[in-house]
Image (cartoon, rainbow, N blue to C red; front, side, top):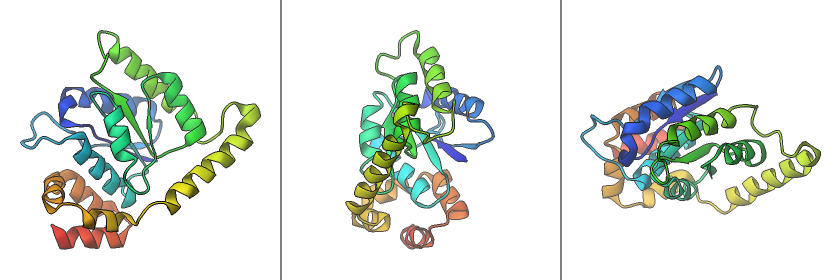
Length: 208
């Protein structure tokens, strides 16, 4: 699995910690750190980051994204507005485990500011550890696994039918917003170099 890590500029000081924890607990997965970094000239809101998360996933450049903002909620909601992104809010280890096993999405958002306090780093490590503790999508509890997995497939199917094509969405957005996310050169270059969604890549290249 190829995993991307990215978070809003409001929490850049926690980027290395989050990246290190994902690298530590995600087994043989390849982990790519997209920031946001403290030395970047641009600052990116959680909404702008959610659009970058969408590009990375929709392009096929990565399989899974770990992201976050101060509360974690805003990023989760913003990511879930993007076609093809199913993002869970995981403030605790239990939430992380249940999302991985039952909902089996392709992104998670962690709270990195709200109630972080002195135990924040400990809780974050426990959360990331539990997220990757078992292969995703096994269902939980085990006695109800078959029903849970059927519900998850139904959820994803309904969501897919309710969404427009990802390229159509991005093409409809304000040009200044698109220009802003295109300034995140490391993400855009990674998508163009590694993505398998040729339609999306062609649109990016035509609008850069």
